Length: 178
Image 1 (tube, rainbow, N blue to C red):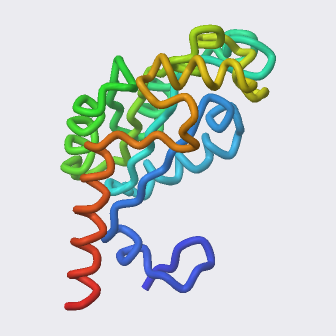
Image 2 (image 1 turned 180 degrees about the horizontal axis):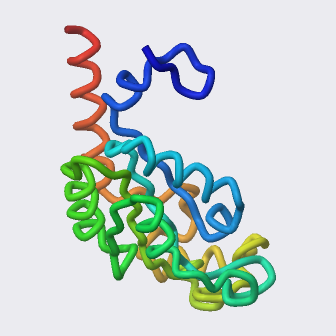
């Protein structure tokens, strides 16, 4: 029986479960992401799905300052399955990509979700300034208004999202009881 990276978990057991990773440009600039993707492709970890927040922003400015490689081609070269979501705020498109990734039979999947940093913020949207600094009270208020939230609300959760989470909570409670 082969164990994975020193853990007492057989590789076959690791392959049974879907594992989801959320990462951004900075994560994929790190060398370890290349090593991890290469290993995942080599091992055929087809239930590994990475959602990449492709917002093309770093603290210093646009990613083109230090990161110009074609991420999709890099992951394909490692044996990965690559999907693209043109609008990372399109939940239906993300859902379709996740469903496609889940049926991939032999490769880990990378879903490139094109995002806009500080989406909804009238003064900071698309600006690298929003990467490493808080918006500030006035910009937070304007952003909440732009996104249809009450400006004085601490949290703004859409009714549709709240209803979906309640369904999940109930499903988990039933599963735990069983």
